[in-house]
Image 1 (spheres, helix red, strand yellow):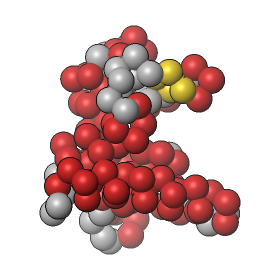
Image 2 (image 1 turned 90 degrees about the horizontal axis):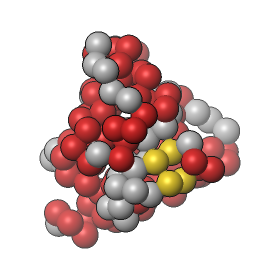
Image 3 (image 1 turned 30 degrees about the vertical axis):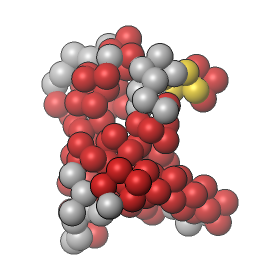
Image 4 (image 1 turned 120 degrees about the horizontal axis):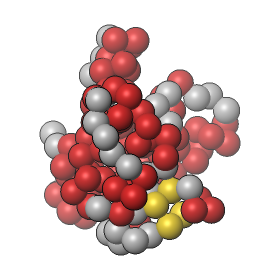
Length: 128
């Protein structure tokens, strides 16, 4: 069973090659985990935290925001589907948004599958 910490490390490798100063998505996603302002806002709303967008450059804060985000949306997924989210579902949520698991557009599904393939490859490399 893959832990959150293991999954997050694999995601960070895919997202930024572990670079806390990485900038992507035309400047919208930054840091170790390529966090967007919307993720910061969601986490603050759901957990009453006071993260700032500059906190996305801090590895520890980024990891905590990712855990909060995935925990919240994983609970939503479990309520709506009756199933616990897998590492694949969590990774796709991180890349494609909280409801990525419901997306059906072929191009989007393909991109999410490609992303999961990259994360899963890192998991295999790191932990198997």
